[in-house]
Amino acid sequence: PTRRSSDLYILREKPDVIINIVDASNLERNLYLTTQIAELGVPVVVALNMIDIVQKRGDEIDFSALEKSLGCPVTPISAVKNTGLDELVEKAVTLAGRRPAPQVFSKEVEAALVQIGEAAASEASLAAYNPRWLAVKLFERDEDLMNKITLPQAIKLRVEDAIASVEAVMDDDAESI
Image (tube, rainbow, N blue to C red; front, side, top):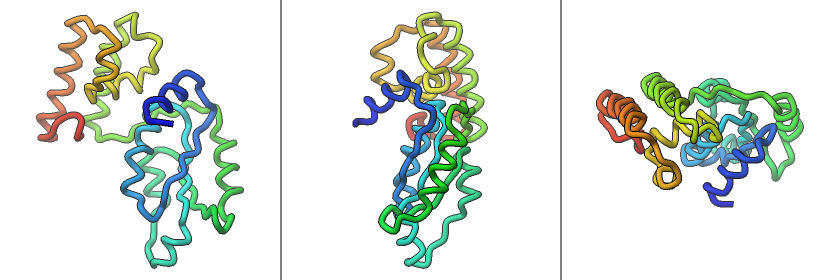
């Protein structure tokens, strides 16, 4: 499914846990999606697939540092060699049903997300949305969301102030941040 349809499924169906299978041999490229999934407020276990290829190249991945950065369990697997799958399933079952409070961004962004979330919480028409997801989408100035909702001017100003503050500190635009 597309990114948007998977967002909708996760937000509407509220699965107990998500197993995010990531190509460990091209980790950086795949972690962006992982952070987006973590933003949805559903427990996530990251499966680093093709770990055998990473090891064969002589590369190493610091799993505990990655877990700390992502705020979720990380398990190395090799689907081809059928290794690590039992541990992956065990972690997923253990995590199922918990609702994490992901903190995958810098402290400045996290503080802005709190401010944006508080501003959005005062608008009754937004109550159906997952608060964390909504705050991130507002921070990103997500065009699809902005076309679906109507924000009162006072809330728009609070959201924009929070975003502008982070953009100034980080000297970058919100979408890039």
